[in-house]
Length: 421
Image 1 (cartoon, rainbow, N blue to C red):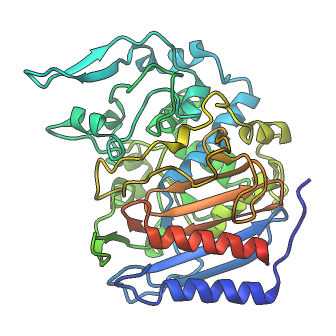
Image 2: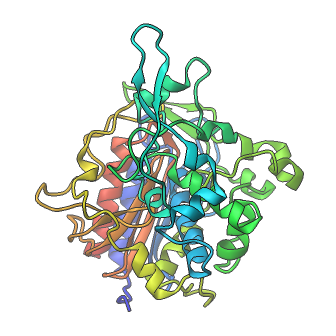
């Protein structure tokens, strides 16, 4: 069992002061942010909201504010997939199950560049088969248009928009043979489709019944309620000179009026890779449940067995110890900055990936323990879950492009301050 920590009152005060300083100027700093850290009992060590809901919004961010959590959704869908493994509906390494539920994954081809004269894509048959493990570890071969120029070019002239709410935007070809390397992409969207087809219910309804309701989460959803929409933080764009402006929301379909109606929801793709909206303090309760080995410390409901949580936090790609040290390219600079690597750590340390999130296998610079799970969301949200030291948390903002230096710096400061406190 992870140790149960508290935080000194002076540390809490210092953390709040740091967040307030980072949100003091709406136009050039972080318009608004929420930070929540929890222990394995689900107690909030610190929770603080600061700033405004957007560059041009007079409304303050508070702890009930709702954020599009984007790729923080992946961990939730990983939990759902592991529940179905416990029930015997899935197996991590059974390609037959994957191809039976998603025949598209049997026939999908690999993009091998473009014809010089015509510009037509060169597509070849794959030799390796896709398994659930390859999807959960981003080794199946899928990419994202905003991180990969080849896939972005493949979608032209119309383009591919992974946040459109349309399933056809998930049908881009692979970038390499399944299992050969790591590439971050739409893999977990395919996992969501497998869950829907295995259970016969929408991914939204599955997660609501089997994850959100048991944990007592009322404001976490693929389709925000009227109340959640009234608390939604606006999206901001940071330009190269550092100034911020309000911008339209990338994940618009679930925010449309028709999305409040179950009939309207049927026409919107439930994105397992990026579809969720949530209050950060509710997301922190999912982290607390993982810290507590699969049982909610607040509701006492078990959503995963302890050995399943152990499996999620085990390195699934030991053969790729440097997978995150390749540059992440800004194929669409509106959505992401160029990043030299996924997570800075000493070059001699191997990197790890669990089932839907990165692992810091060795102790981290902020104070995090071994095999800490962590990941991020495109509009600059970052979470971590340190089962060894019994602490985790999330910082949430709504700024594009990804890799915002100010939010990254604040995350590192706050995480270190939690351990020091």
